[in-house]
Length: 78
Image (cartoon, rainbow, N blue to C red; front, side):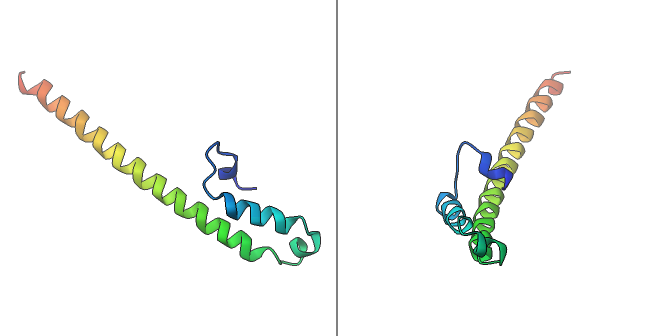
């Protein structure tokens, strides 16, 4: 299973349920019948990861600017 699926906030619930339903049929699972469901789940998880990375990057940039401003203000009066 994907490590992202252990998150408390599950974002791709319908894709996860579709893959679980497909995996209930062992023959489909073993012969590649669930590949389409798995690919859809991977796309959904990737989209969520990219969005989260973009948010984190924006937050980090904002924190860095705030820190630089504080240091500039601190050294301004030296």
